[in-house]
Image 1 (spheres, one colour):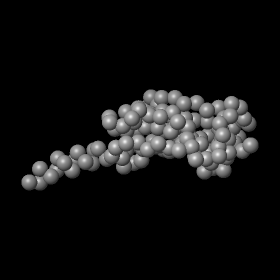
Image 2: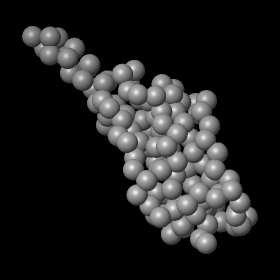
Image 3: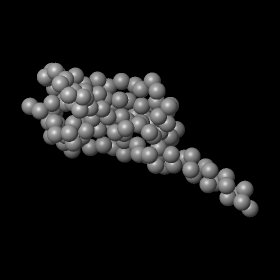
Length: 123
């Protein structure tokens, strides 16, 4: 009887594990369906801005395809998470934004990941 219960419990445990990626649209516990991250900040993305003077200006956001049945990672989610991080640090603009595929996605428990990064500043 214990073995019959162990298999479903193990399957539930494995399917509810999320990502270990910081500032991601998938949490540590994740069963299905990645959330859409709304652009609810006043942070703007610009082409240029002041030079990086403090490491806290470097901001990132990650969109993760954690489960096989999840939709592919979203560029918009990654950028919106990056903008939220900038806003939470007191900045209202980000420049030098890049969105790249994460080559170490599997290590972070994601099938595929897009990472947005940039330099935050105040206008």
